[in-house]
Length: 385
Image (cartoon, rainbow, N blue to C red; front, side):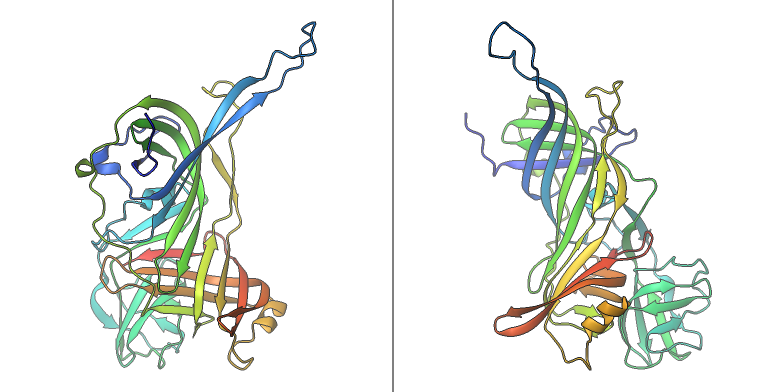
């Protein structure tokens, strides 16, 4: 019987013990994905035994890992402060999950004096741990109104913003950090996941999986996370794809990147796309005690980079070449979505240009900006709010 690639499904669950099947179930662990594919990476030992013939005995199949690739739409769970179904995948790509389940403060309160158009000194209820709000949205009301994102936060409660606000944020301005789920790069406590990949009557089990990904945003389109996971071959059996009714997933649809924001160095930039590549480097440690002769994949390094293509501006508005030559780090980011629990924000606190390339889009001049997302465990923040 021919198998149909359209009839596929994916279950994913964080493992309690690395490399041990976490036994994901359809009722709680289904993730909506597209373009699901897998491939095998066997260690083939070529032999050259003397057989009394010009022909060898043939190769030997050694240990094997499995690569699983798929795309995920970037969307919220629909409930503010509730992680999306794909959040566990991002965690296994080396990003930490922080859930702010109640607004800070519960009701808007006055800022302290001393703010500017790009900074705010938060009030009494704000915490005093440096960077605790970095990457989170902040809403201002009263004398200055609007939403921005925090690119830096000090123990003295000074928040640096991704935007240039309409006026200085002074003591008559109120602030509030809304309920949100924030993802940020991590270097410790990176979990592994078990993946169950169903294909029209067959089930592939992959354990100890970790991965890398690229975030892609298109103007007038949706945000995607293109994932590549490497794990250990568990088993392959003839198992029916779970019925759709048994696999509840987030009911939200991905918001469209329109009517939102796209910023380069705190100025609006008319770009067609923006992408961020995690740049995770991984290895499977050799271990003859393991079933395949390898341990599960470990993320050993990260080199996060990005690119965008804003329309070119006069030097007086944006001098990208000067910033490139001087190595000036500057914030880059976007946000979009109109419904609480399904709004998306990406904040790159310190993008450092690695190249600036002239281009053309429909007869209009563009600048292809390539940049490094710099900062230890702070290259970029993805927030749902």
